[in-house]
Length: 219
Image 1: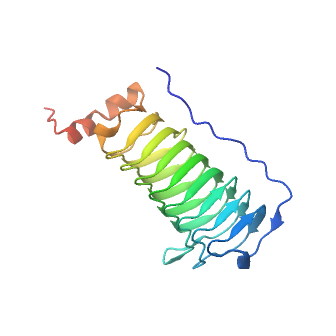
Image 2: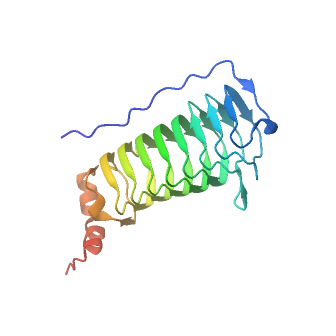
Image 3: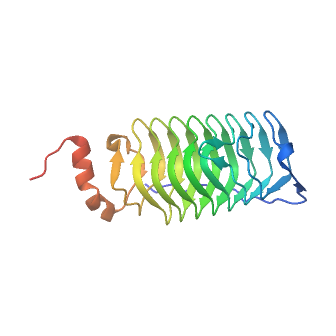
């Protein structure tokens, strides 16, 4: 059986209007805007919608004072060369979005819906996607220290050219999840890897991790 690859869509943004800090607020609907060189520390944007926008060189706030994107909806958007010590967007929707060259410390994005999302050349310390639903998501040439997919529903997700240190998938439902090439030093939830694709080299590398997770002693 052939593993199905993610099916991202290409974003085309034209005739964008320059946005400023004052445009962003909770429950706002912002469409066709370009945000550049902004510091969004402590900005309240819960339940806001960003449609067909572009973010460039934006700081989404320090660890102690991140922007609040709880329940926000970001769709058809490009996020380039940005920084988020804490990306605070739980219960949000990330749809048809491309994120590149961005540094994320802690991604607090649990209980979210992600569809047709591409991360390219991003550095992520910790990504909390517990109980989220991911469809057609790709991490290209990214470095991720730890990703948490516990109890998530994950379909057509791949990690080409990426490195992941710790991979959590306890209680996850996986379908067409391609983790070939990854060499995590810890996998939590081995019994939930049903629906994932690995290669023969990984099978040998993961043998000790699998045995440990399943309580098997190898002598």
